[in-house]
Amino acid sequence: MEYDITHRPSDSLLTVSLDAGEEIRAEGGAMVSHDASVEMETNATGGFLKSIRRSFGGESFYQNTFRATEAGGVSFAPPLPGDVTHVELTDETVYVQSGSYLAGDTALDVDTKFGGSRSFFGGEGLFLLKIAGTGPTFLSSYGAIEEVDVGAADPFVVDTGHIVAFEESVDFTVRRVGGLKSTVLSGEGLVCEFRGDGKVWLQTRSADAFLSWLIPKLPARPPSSGP
Image (cartoon, rainbow, N blue to C red; front, side):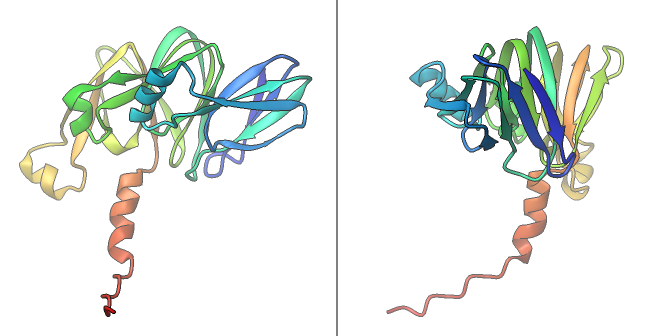
């Protein structure tokens, strides 16, 4: 399997070249195009219960598997304007924020991990997506993706709205950005402090921040005049 990511970082397009018999699995709605030699099958990957758990993590209940009957390509794009990055797993696990999983090798196990109250108060919901195994996976973002190496002696702080993914070797805690005044008035709110040895992927834009800017500018709905 070979891949190419073009139009980065604002309008990224992922194109995967498959040899005969190779497969790749993607989120519902992610496919842009494919060659006629590539067939698509839709199913609840891992069974009904795992699909339910995965939907709690912000992903689609059904996923699409693309299989090449002979050499061919398939392209994918995320729903928001932004970046796509490749992460190669070798018997490893990464945790991904809601909506950032785009596609991956069919050998990978895509499930959900209960994040507890810390992820809930961090703005990411109660569940994180857990991707484990060996093979390539592709993550998407809103804005560009930045990869950061975190060291055990050098904690790293990220606004909760800018997290894309992090390796299992990295732990995190959610806290206020500063004192009460900073939390209320700075516009930053809550942050995640990562500790350990591993990688963290962040996005340069926040969908929540964009909505906070956009919604007050939307025209008010006119009152109903009644029957």
